[in-house]
Length: 327
Image 1 (spheres, rainbow, N blue to C red):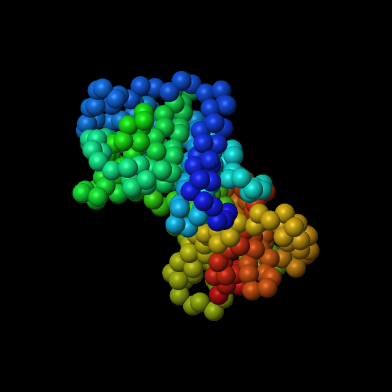
Image 2: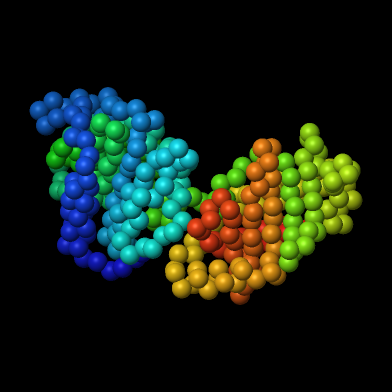
C-alpha cells in the first residue's frame, strides 16, 4: 500500500518494527563475526543452518516512492506463509513465495562483510532510514541487519548496519532484496500449488457439462478409449501432445496478475462464481487427488479460484481462457 510519508514517519515505522518484533518471545540475538572491537572480514557474517530458519521479517522503506511496509513470514511443512501482512492489508490467502524466501534464507548464510564504511553519514548511505531491515530466527538463534545503498567507491558492495556498526558487505542476498519492489512480490506468484508433471488426467467442463478429456499414458495423451487425443482442428498428432502439455502448464502455473483482496469486490465475485455458466478444469494426479480450477470471465478480465488455494481469488492471463476454448 503506497502513501505519502515523511522521513520522520519512516523512522517511526522502523522503530515500531523493532519494538513489535521485540515484544515477541524470541531467542537472544547471536554474536556475529564482527563486533565493534573485533572486525573479521571475508568470513560468513551469520552462523546458522538455513534449513532450521522458522521465521523471517522484512521491513522495506523507500523515501523516493514513499512506500513503507513490514511483513513477517513463517515456514511450515508445506512452505512459507504470511503470518503478518503489512498494516491495512486484509488477506485471506496467505500463501507466500516459498521459492524466493528459501533462496533468500540460503543466501543470507553466505552474507560476508568486507570492511568498515570509513566515511559518510547514515543518511548518505541510505541507512537512515534503511532500505531494508531484515530479521530471521531459528528455534534458538536470531539475526538481523539493515541494508543501505550501493557503496560509492565500489558498486559491488553495499552499506549495511549491524551491531550499531556501519560496514561494507556483499553477497547474493543483497541483489535478491532489491528484487522486492513491493509486498506482492513475496506472495506465491503462480495461482495454483500444482506441478503439471504430477497431473495424469485433464477434464474440462462448461456449465457443468464435460467437453474435453485426456489422460496421460506414457509419453502420450489419450482419450477414455485409449486413442490419441485430438484437439480442435489440429491435424498433426505430435502437435496435439504439445498443445496439451502447454495448456496444462498454463492452467497450473499461470502467473497471478492481481490478488483480489478487497472484501467487497471479492464477495461480489464469489457470488458470480456460484453460478453455473463457468468454465472448469479438473486435474487428477497419479495418486487420484483431483484439483478443481474455476474460471469466470467478467468485464474483460479472467478470474480464477482453485482448490489448492481455497481462500484466494485471482486475476489471470487471458491466454488461459483461449486454452479452455481449445484454441
